[in-house]
Length: 404
Picture 1 (cartoon, rainbow, N blue to C red):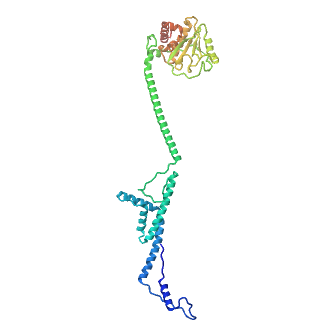
Picture 2: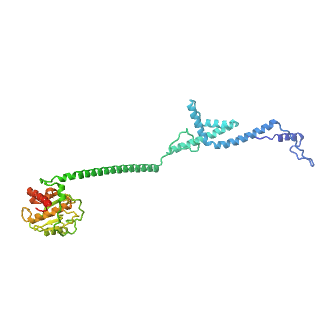
Picture 3: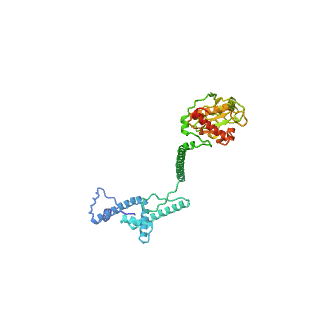
């Protein structure tokens, strides 16, 4: 807005000089310039000057405020437009809203100034719209972060960062894997606890019923004396035994610890005419040849000699299923039917009675190799069942009377 300032006192002075004829001519020598007469200013002139000063001040203030409110005018226009739509009125343009905002703040600006502000706003909006269209064609997104926060304004989501999204997916997968691993661990722990509980229950039941099963004869032998009495009356001395232990090897003497002894097994060498020393040497050579795994704790010769090959604290490779809870005795023989000599028979009674005493067992705890696995060993006692029953009866009488 262009304003023109007029100095009234200078115009009146010029008219007075022109009336006196001194305008535009040099004054004569010695002529003094007349002192201008100060004229009084009327109230109308003062009010006119004040109005002009106020207009100038308002124009500067409006320019400053308009610069500060450039980011807020668009939001104000959007809010007024939504309010009009909610009230059912016809929405007005953003430029009209801005113009109304400016007029409401500065009512003293002239219509010419309003039109100039309106034209400037329109040109600025056209440039902004053109720029936004160009950005949209290039595939970008237009965000206006200059205006103040408006809760009712439409907010567009920010573009997702591919790296951040991949990192979130990776963390989610890690959490799922950890959850699955934790569940599997808990399930395995529960299964292990259930298995241990079942095993302990089985052991308890087996131990509880083991005594009764042991009292039942494994064969048709019927003891004449109760089991407890036989065990209590057994006072057999240790017979003459030659200790000639095998060398520790993986085929005849593995050196593993023997568990609780439950039975004593009787075998025959299956090689008639061989002595106890020869059978002991055979077990020793297995550690060198490695042709098979076989051994026994004791070997009784056909002359009645007893050789101990393996300590009683270790296992022997005699009965596959029962090596860890039994003692084995090998017996030599001469006849083809496998019948033991009288000397072998007497040594077998003495050694068996002493072993039953050591492990607190009874004669019905004696077993043939045939009774565990079905192998025909010892041959004579497998083919002659009554001979085995007679051996158990003689063993019981030997323990009770210490004689046959």
